[in-house]
Each structure stands twice: as structure tokens, then as C-alpha cells.
Image (cartoon, one colour):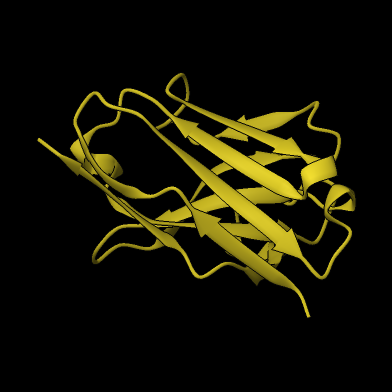
Length: 124
């Protein structure tokens, strides 16, 4: 059974930082492209960041580039999202997901498994 479990969300003031983790089980973590998505109230689930299996190539939405950093530790079956300089507009439920392809892109349709999400709330 494949499971992805996010953790590390919470309430933080604008300008602060959080580090999200995504722990995987039931799969060979290192063979898959992984991504982070987020969904704010009343909005679509949007791509945030992605990373290839080796960790050598990363991709970011324009809205988070320069502030967020995606990484993975295949030996620990864990992916991370370091979020700095947080803004109120970053408030959302953040999801990790396993992609179908070497580079699965921005579309949620290219991802098979999803975590339950972790809430990030940034106050003004």
C-alpha cells in the first residue's frame, strides 16, 4: 500500500519559515519524480515545486521561486519543502505527490499518489 504523509505545517507570521516533510512508504521512493502542490480556499490545486529522482533538477512555480527550496533524501524516503519569507498568500493546504514520468510537469493529472495534505497558515 502506497502512502505519502506530509508534516510540518502550522501557523507562522509573514516573513517566517516552515519546513514541510513528505514521508513515503510502500514504494521505492528514489525511482519517482516527486512534487509539491498547494490549494488555497476557493482556488485550484496548483503546482509549487518538483524534483527528479536524483535531486539534480528542480522546478518551481514563479510565485515561490527564490523563497522555497525542494529537496529529497532517497535513503530516508523523504522529500522536503523549505519555505522562507512566507507571505499571507502562501496560506494553503500543501500536498506531496508521486509523479508518473521522469519529469511530470505542473499538471496534477500526471501524478498518481497524494498525501493527505498539511495546513500552512501565514498571518499578516
